[in-house]
Length: 477
Image (cartoon, rainbow, N blue to C red):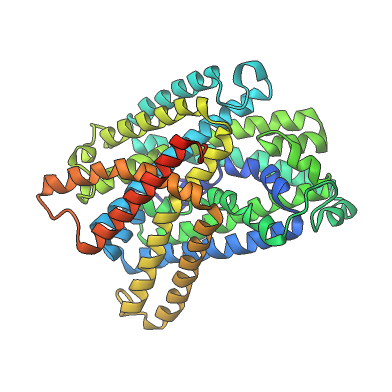
């Protein structure tokens, strides 16, 4: 079993952090989201694009772990090393904020899952009852994590194993009833679905693919706990390959079991609805239990990551020093308190959202794109300069190609997301910059360079436009 003996994570434990972070809520909602957007042909193209882009990003994380072993908590630290203090802060804040939004999404999904059995109480996951249950859960996890990171990591490893079982059962059941004629009928769009261009079909799947790949950097975030530094890159690739196979199967197999219109119409979590059609009501119950286990496990992993990012950013003076404090169990307590206060506020805000489920999913995806873009950009810079490649100069060209593809992929994802979500993220970034001002004042350091001032000005303008859109009603959450 994976362990963290002596405060250090083994390769299996690091891999479990990656798998545990990636296999959360998103994989259980792939059938419905893809079914509403496209048929198997568009789905295959979407996975080729997403899989290639994210694989290249995984290779960038692997290369950076090998070439820059001195940089810990890599997601934001790489951005700072490549692009300066303010971009490092934006990466750290954006990654932390996206993780908080992802945790909110998990609780909305728990509520909507319980809503299948108690519709009057939990509804779509944003009712008063669902919000109260979510708040109780948030703070129960909070106090458990305060008892120690190693204990939480052990629980994550056990839960990671447990939550894979329902997914494997669902895949095997759908393989057993595979109907080639039905798959062929759905292949280019299916019967009874609105006409859309192939480009539009693929575009409409892009944010969900980003969401389900979130967590690919889990080993990198916890690099300071690794027994062997090389294990960070290996765990990233192992987790990526295994989880990608599961996600592609979960997406494509339902098309061979029922009409696309049926897949598109099932309620969330859509894998439960699909399996109910395939094997009967017990399938929905079985998957719903798997969802609850999976989401709680992923929530645990992401709560750890949220606190770790704030803690590491404070240690490197990119966040106020208050978040570098640890309790007697070596847990970044202040960072955890701020994280769960913010998550709680966002959970309460879902009461006023028209579609809290998909809104939180898409916001989480877009918020993660900036840190990923900066990591990929740093990969390009490092390969061009040759830093860390003194012993392996033949790897420079390959790694630069990988990093450039990752850069192009993340830019395409921004375009696919649309202006609405980019502006809403800017709305959150502007007040968050107060933390940057606080940290720079503590250090008595220069606030911005000339280029950073331009970046800040663009962020403020985008934030004001987004805020006006919310006030005027032209942008709706």
